[in-house]
Image (cartoon, rainbow, N blue to C red; front, side):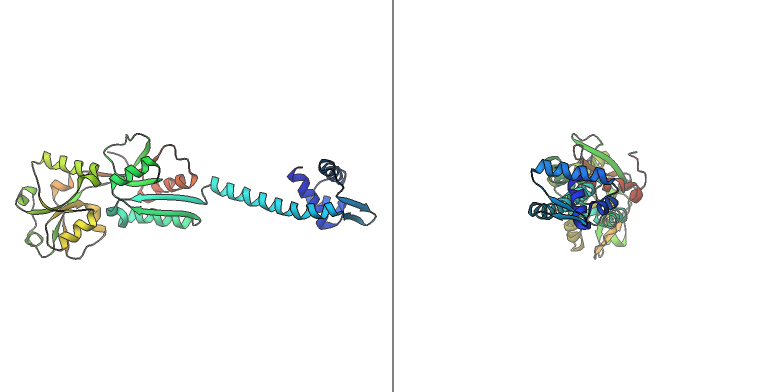
Length: 301
């Protein structure tokens, strides 16, 4: 029993005659008659009674008609769903984004464009620091991440650069530093700093500290925060200064003034996109394909 034969049989049942069915399915009448007979032989029962004005279904024929309609509908649904999955039109994608970059225009444009173009994909966005993103990417609980990496070589991951960021100084708006900005980090030797834990983003932490070591600057840390939003909230409360990615300024924080220092601008903080090299999800790769339109062609250097 073939789907082709079932579709011919349904056409005969719905039109009431072999000749009308042959015109509907664009098959010559003798060939259609032969396929119906092969179907009857395969099932071992008669399905249709021929008479001068057309055909009449047997009891078995009426039962087969009900089942055949459902089978053909099911086949259509399966083919449509598999086709949509293959094209990435449906499915699920989980994206991690560093908290700092959720408000960056290019990232916001990427999220918006993907949602507009693929509205039927279950698109989940998780604000995560780089360390947790890497862990979840490698364990397979996250499809793709926007994060800081120390290099393009990440075992088991495909990486591509998105853009280059740098550092900036965040100070309480009511502080003397806001009124009289420093020009060098050495002027902040006695200042209190709010800092992040290395464990939550080792790559970012180590890159920043290596830059400070080259400048022979060691911040005096008096408070710690779990992420940049928490750190900036503590700065706004007057608990200290902070050195944060320049992208943080896209999310203005009341009570915080952002200051540019040449020594901080020289600390390159490249932002990357990464996903597992074994992840062949079309929905995922549709997201990757939109990157250039939002970020442009980015290089590592």
